Length: 193
Image (tube, rainbow, N blue to C red; front, side, top):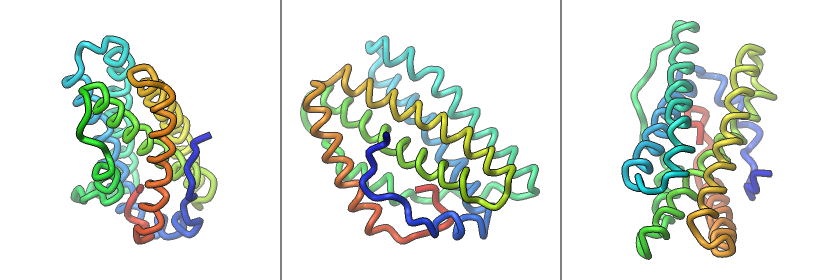
């Protein structure tokens, strides 16, 4: 369904669960950044009524996810650490086209959001299936379901505001580039991406 061309290395879950404080910290900041990205889209494209209506509840949901991860840290007597540079997202942003019309730039942003959500969904699925802690399996299953819906929403919005055939072609370019990014990133258990 997600179309990702390179699956996450199966060893990632085992590495991630060695230091839950680190992966939960990174997860918390990912949720915060997702909310901020939606707010930014609303601020920059307020005339896109359908998008504004669709993203407003996502802002609330993503911020709620941030709070859920904070609660999970607290429940486990772990601390929210410092935010780190997200090499994965930064590599995607470098691939994003910055030229073209205002609508073209909107489509690019929506596709980047869709790809981040798709990879997050894939990672949450792995955690929901393979992490040793049963409570975290259920915790991450809920996030997986939410991210799948967000991925679909961003793709649908990109097709609404861009030429659907061009969006389809550009999405394939993003998927191919994302596979290269994943292949070149160090396998780290302290990062969601």
